[in-house]
Length: 303
Image 1: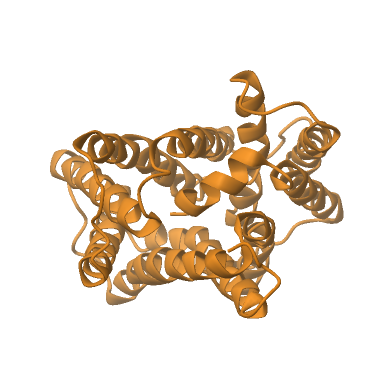
Image 2: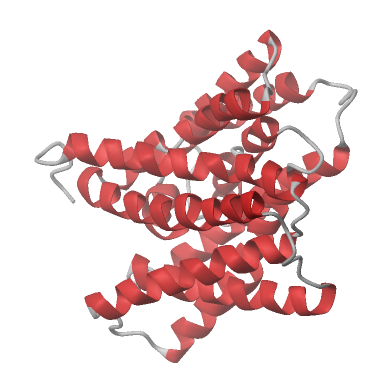
């Protein structure tokens, strides 16, 4: 971990890029599954059910259940069942109302929100890079959304911003709770808790099992590509390059989402929005590098 420029560094970067690509597909798949008639509870219940099975299998095979206290288990369960479940639901719900590329860019202000919260709780000190990151992100959002929000669905914007805000709380909270728990075990518990949350939601609101095979393929894409593969490649890459490099390379995610949205959905950003997107990404990089909270928490936060 310390010799991040040593053997495997290039492979680690490639793994983080693959991870970013997997996460970038999440809002794209979201467009397809909702268009295919699936509801939120069904999509996320299946996502987290399959993810939990995969992670628990790896935990058991790797004998990773060590030093897990009841208190840590309860906190992780609460973190997954409430905080992460809320973030995942809001983020994918945003694509019902706004383009997936825009949802991803708005969501990616979360590194700046982490900085603001860390400063407010005195976990970080103010620096030029943090102030610059905040200013670039604000400017970027203004350019992406426009001052008047004309033609945009405010509910979609609020869903993306809400997801970013909750994810920021998730990162700060996980930094305090699960430093003593392995990332794989924490992922298994968190996905299990989120699965239960959406299982209960589905029992109350109803599931949509009677959907086309192609829609089921898209849901499986979320579970396999945007969850299992994305998380496992991130963890592997993290071991090779370290948390700071991993968090910076991960900012490719919204760029990849924009590209995928153009290829699969025909979405595109105009020139002004493209400049805004660049500002948002620059703000995310400045907020994450160097950043005590982001670099420590990134190993637990990517789900």
